[in-house]
Image 1 (cartoon, rainbow over the protein chains, first blue to last red):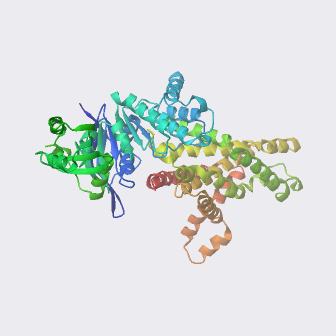
Image 2: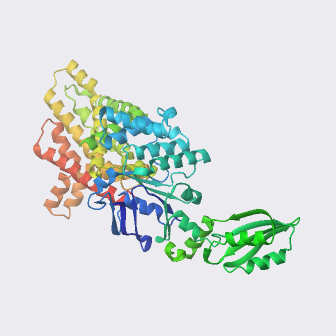
Length: 324
Length: 244
C-alpha cells in the first residue's frame, strides 16, 4: 500500500542545535504511529514540520503524495492536526469555532452544519457548544481541538499529546476515538505515556535528541526488554537452592533471581538467554520434580525500561537485529 | 477569496463578541465630539463645514488605531492559536488580508457612527457635502494606513503593549515628517529632493488635501501603496516569527 506520510531526511536546526536530526519514516493507511521520546526530543518539531507550521532546514515530507514545501495548502487540506495543548480562540463558542474551521476547510450550507454536528457528536461536546471555549475545562478544550481536527474527515491525522492532562476516563475516550478512526486513516500520535503505545498504536517510533532510535511494532519494542520472555515462578515448601541450581542448569537460562522467600513461599524470576522462550522447559521441570506451583507466568517486557535504556543511551536499535 | 472572507467574518464578529467594540466606539465618538466642539471651536467659527471635525483625526487615530491593531497578531502568537491558523489550508497573505480588512471595516463602522455631526452641520447651515464625502474617504484611508502599520508591528511581538507603543511611535513619525520643524532640521543639511521625499511620506500632507475636498489620484495612490507595503511586510514577518 502507498504510504500516506513520507518523511524524508527531515532536519530542523535552531542556531547550532539540531532539534530534529535527519529523520525518515513513513506511515501507511490503517497505521497508528506512536511517536515516543522524552520532552524536548523533537517530537513536536517534527509534527510542526509535517503540518507545515515550521519550515524544515533540510529534507522534506510528502503527505498523500504532495510535497509539504511545494504544495503546502494541499497538504494542509489533507491533514487534521491537533497542536500541543489544543489552542483555540477562547472567546468563541465551540459551535462558532467549528463553523469557522469548517468554512476555512471549504464547507458551505447544510454540509457545513452537518460536518460540525457530526464532529460535536463524535467527541461528546453537545453539552457545552454555546459556552465560550475559555470557560471550558481542560478535557472539553481538548475535545474542541479533536473535533476541529476530525471535522473534515482527513486521510491523515496528526495529534500532539492528545491525552496529556486528561483524567483516566477521558484518556480512554480519546483512545477509543483514535481506534475507531484508525482503519481508513494514517494517524500519528505523540505521547510520553508508554501504556498508550500498547493500547492504540500499531507501530512505535522513538526519538531522542532529534535522532530516530527505534522504529517497529510495540511488541518488538517490548522484546527489547531484558525481561522479555522472563518467567516468574512462585512455589511452596521446597529446597530453594536445589530448585535454583536445577533452573540454572537449563540450557537457555541466563540468570535466576530470587525476588522473595517468605513463609516457605519462594518467588523466582528466570531470565532467558537472548529472550528465548523457556516457559515450556520450566513447566516440564516442575512437573517431573512435583513442585508445588502457586504461580507461573511469562513477562512480556517492560516498555518503560526499554524506553529509558534507548533514550539515555541515544544509540539506534533495530528490532530485527534483536529478533534474529 | 472565500478564505479571506471566513477570516474577515470571524475577526469582525470577535470585536463585537467582546467589550472592545463598545468601548472603542464610545471613546472614539466622545473624543471626536470633544475635539470638534471644544478644541476645534465648531460653533465659534461660524462656518458650515466639518473642518474642525476632520482636522483632529490624525491625532485621534494615533492612539486609538494602534489599540485596535495591537492584538491582531500578538494575541494570536501569545495564545498559540497561530499554530492552528497557519496549519489550516490557507496562505499567510489570505490570513493577513482577512484580519486587516476586518479591523478596517470595524474602524469604518466607528467612523460611520459619527454621522450625527454631518446631520448637525447640514441642519445648521449649507455645507459643501462633496467636501465632506471626500474628507470621510480621506479619513478612512488614513485609518487604513495606521492600521497597516499596526498590523505589521503586531506580528513582531507576542506582547500587545509593545506592539501598541511601537505602532504609536512609527505612526507619530509619519505624522511628524510633514511638519516644518522636522523638515527644517533636514533642510539644513540634506538636499532638497530628500526633504521633499520625507515630507511627501507624511500622512498629513496627503490627508490635508483630501480634507479640503480634493481627491487627488496621487494621494489615493500614496495611501494604497503605503498600506500595500506594510501588509507585504506583515506577511513576511508572520512567516518569520510565527513559530518563535
